[in-house]
Length: 167
Image 1 (cartoon, one colour):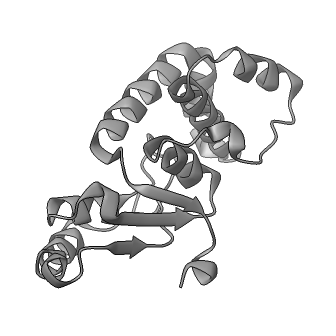
Image 2 (image 1 turned 45 degrees about the vertical axis):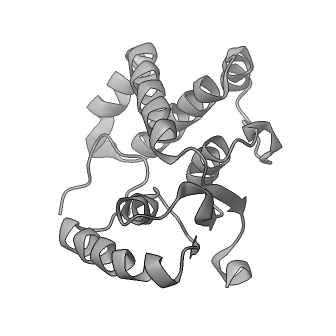
């Protein structure tokens, strides 16, 4: 199976499994209106829960990755400045500080994660070069995706918490 070039978070739930999960959740929502989704990853199960009829305010999620935490904080109305992380490269840190909105900060960090990911895969050098040379375009694309995702998931609950602490 090929690794998608445009994804940062590489885990995913296949379509048939998402359909099955949504069908099961449609039955569960009637008797269990609150759902807890630890290790939320890229929020695929949240999408299934919403499609099954769960109200966003009754969806509780958690994860420990920076990817999921950036999105989770944004979707739940928390400031990403409350997440403890450090950008060690002075140039990248200086660029990050110039970002004005939460969505801009998230887009920049996601671009940075993708560039770091691609820099380690030698046969993807052309993609890495494109990410760096066309950074403004890539960051703008990610920014648009982040804004669209917020419209879909805004109102859920998110905690930066390990799976074992959630259950």
